[in-house]
Amino acid sequence: RLDDGKEVETVYIPEEDRGTLCISSQVGCTVTCSFCHTGTQRLVRNLTSGEIVGQIMLARDRLGDWPGASASDLRGLPDSERKITNVVLMGMGEPLNNFDNVRDAMAIAADGEGLAIGKRRITLSTSGVVPEIPRWGDEAGTMLAISLHAVHDELRNKLVPINKKWPLKDLLAACRAYPGLSNAKRITFEYVMMKGVNDSIADAKELVRLL
Image (tube, rainbow, N blue to C red; front, side, top):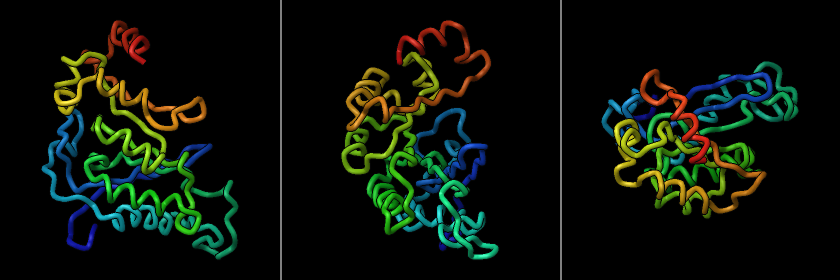
């Protein structure tokens, strides 16, 4: 819950080799992806950079995950025991529609004098706000994930309506030109399989071809 009473989601995903924190960038969303619950809510407002960073700090408090001091006994926590190793901007909202606040928050998160989470451990997930993708690479330089979910414009227009404004060819061109892209720094493509909608063998083969 935020100071004005509004609420956002922050989700911790523990795995054997990593702990990922999924954080929000907006209260509500304007993108209205058909399979996303947040898409059914109207956009209330952008989060401030402090509210975005605050989600990481709150999670660290809850998990006892502060370097140099654990919540239980204040002894040092080596990096290998850090509970939050990765941060993904994949919660409520389209992060590139709140560009400046998200950029400033991730600068604090990545800074050695801030929360000291390396940029390669921070991933911004976007539904495809094409003009802001190269700018994010230039100004923030984190990892990038694309919320894809369909391999043809006709279907993606329905699942991810922002595709009507920036279709697949424009989105993939922006990905190919993403600053700093290399074998060590790749783009993740997210694809939720929905039975009878986008899960055919033909879809799978086209996905391979497309990427």
